[in-house]
Length: 367
Image (cartoon, rainbow, N blue to C red; front, side, top):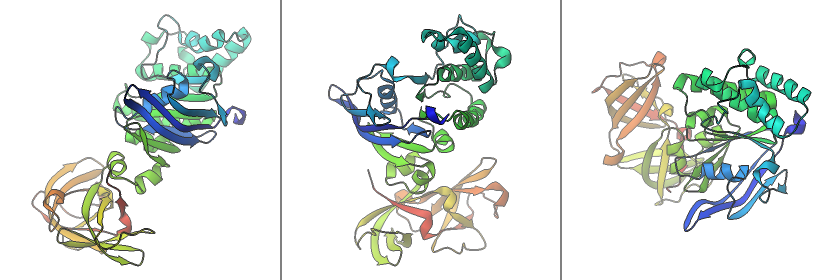
């Protein structure tokens, strides 16, 4: 289906409601056939961006380009985009097959083509045995599959998805994440997906655009954003992080040393190491901290502390550790340890060592 793949670009896209900037100068590009997720908290502007792409919201400025051609002036029906909503938006009086056929009948496709295409879509979403049922006879997951099939039936240029899994329970949601990723691979279309769920964004996307207050906070691959967040907001929103505030004290090969409270620590930095005396904020993921009781971790950065709390999560232990020597507001560090390889009894009051390598943490900008 390579001929159905299209690229999309936003060039300084803005949308204002009076004095409020719902979207403020967003620019990004999506390559043909990619899965882009717009991720952010409520009110970040992600849905307004999606509705602008769909044509339901008229931008106040900037341009939307499909295959490098401006489309902001086109009404929704001339953009030929498929849309899947959070609430499914199925016609309750129609059967599954009739719902899928609807966009084809609106476009006056021949009946033979409609029947063939409906059959293809039913097979694609594995609902061939439910074609005669109505939406009220389906589960939430099945209704979502029908909505996907209907949105794909007329071979749209793009598929736009507005939090389509948010109404489902946790297990079904996880199952449909896998199915949706596989569906994207099989149909080959460019997907634009909106969610506030970080796990969805990380697990399904080729590219993620993190939104905050109408602006693009950071854009990149899931791995790049998680491993190399540029700002404190991105590090805190995408996963969990510990934050260490201090001052650089020495530039050294491959990084710099900094002091946090009464502790001297080392940070790797490929370029742009701060000068001595400059304030720094370091983000450290909980799973990148090693914990030892009888044996110190053999790491460049080493602290001691006391376990204040422990939560068993099945796959992991989540520990809260009061670290010695750090400033009062930063002593509580979150650490996750795989349960199957936890070499100590993680009980409150136990004294432990904490360690991490200079490459494990990231210098971020306060925002």
